[in-house]
Length: 364
Image 1 (tube, helix red, strand yellow):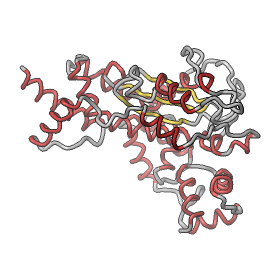
Image 2 (spheres, rainbow, N blue to C red):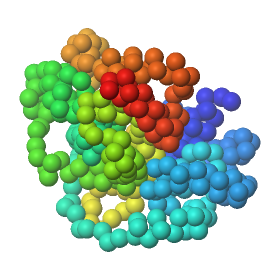
Image 3 (cartoon, rainbow, N blue to C red):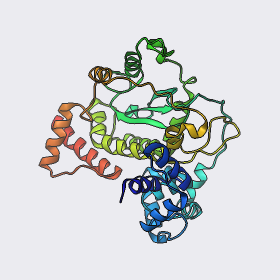
Image 4 (cartoon, one colour):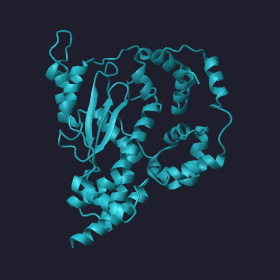
């Protein structure tokens, strides 16, 4: 495949429409193709939107598998996008009907009234990023830090870590503010230099990221909250330093992998028009990458490599999911008992219980 086909296939598998793919190829990569040429290239590779649908049992098996994990929180639109990004060709209506059959209780649970929200607007992509921490998993030792672009609603990062309160150990408020003001030096052409480039505010004022946390809970975090709450109710989690460290050791990598998937799915899903919103509709990735299509521009501030290196030196990065001593002990027990790294939530639970029992027996 040539470079144009490689990029076209990538955007096709993300679920973008033909028009959106053409725009991304033209503005981001310099490939100017006609609609008929794009379709012909994709068809030659066996990629279609409205024919050659995947076999029904493959779609059902995939959705059943997703319903066994945090995918049980998804609505049919989100699940349809997930099917596309996993190489399945299926209509949205078919996904809706399958979910209705496989998970009728979940469908009923997700049906609820919506609240009228305040209206929010900003000039364009990179004009303002909203940064915050999600603390619903914090009682179990895991904090999630994230940032969202105010204009496009594009998720800039979504990271699971040990803490949300120590700025030297996570990309969160204090450290972000320091790095931002360090990079935006006094410049007569920059009206947002220095301290003006970062604002601290209440959660109510930080509505873009605060409202998105409810999306994260519905699509992913509630699943983990249920698992950890079950461990607590069954007497296998008491909130001690050891228990939190074991939770981090066993679950951190899996949670981070799912967060990356949620980020990708959110950035490539289509935001519908809303009568209560004046923000543009469309996919966050397209809104972010192609501001000219929405009669605006990017407000990114370019910085030098020298400044970037200074910011990197002032930041701290976590290379281990938990305390180094607990990490080494867990690795030793896994080698002795021939245990493997967990690949899903259920294997992680079994590993947690095994390690906890082994360590507690040695302590007592």
